[in-house]
Length: 354
Image 1 (cartoon, rainbow, N blue to C red):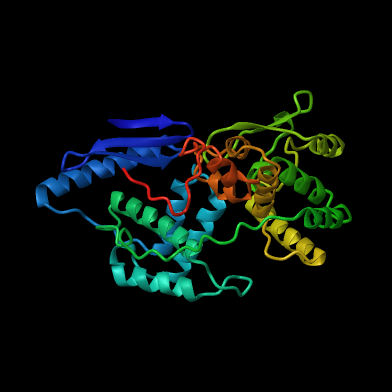
Image 2 (cartoon, rainbow, N blue to C red; image 1 turned 180 degrees about the horizontal axis):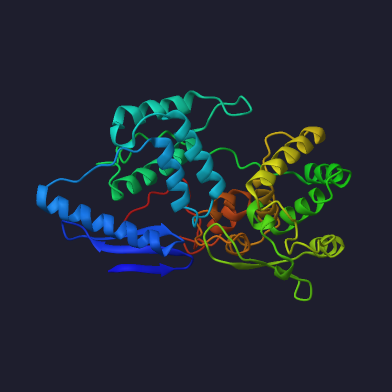
């Protein structure tokens, strides 16, 4: 109980009026943690004395900034900031404590019917992702006595389409790399080669440091992954050659300097989209290169378990999406069945008794 530090952040630990244990992350300053702990203990005394909690009136846009500050340790900052920005814009001028289930439902419908930046239809998974962020934010608001309850906890979830597993054919990949090689960007071609030959995610590539590249062992060390588990990824000869020729900057240890920031990451997205347009390739995003890596391995007969290990999947369920590409995998499976009649073939008209 009290104030303690974990990593770079200070936390407070106390018992609420109902006896339950509460932990809150405050930030990098110890003084702020002590100040907030004093405030919480005062609120606890008031609740015991008057039988009610004092709910602070905080504007949604102000709390969005506060939530981002408290969530700076979380991964997927780009997705988090994008979702919080949409929430702050829609509910600007409203108080967190005054939001209702109807407000939440109206927001969901509005997001569903609002086209994407490219004018396309917004998919259900995108809206659901924003709502997961919103619900987590309101849970935090309840803990901080800014809202009485989480009005988004039981909101509707839109149907998510499984979508098509789009991957590049051999000819499409060759065309894309040919255009990338002639691009003015010196980073574009090596980034795409690494993606196609390692199956690593965009964020994993952009966070690569030169110390993570082991030319002798021919492997990459992926230190920051989606599931939080670092892994080694073998380098093909193409990757080894491309990275060995790639220039290094004295002022940065990143293999691809600058792209780890959200701003340049978005710039790369535009560059990549323009490249695909010039190459005449449609229906592809950067993550499709990861699907391309996995799909072509499976079609060459590499076991799904091995592909999953290379992709960094913790379980087999995600890797199973590539199962239909395995050559003859279903036929091989049924071939293992025993010969039920001990090698005898029954006549079609024979009556099976017993």
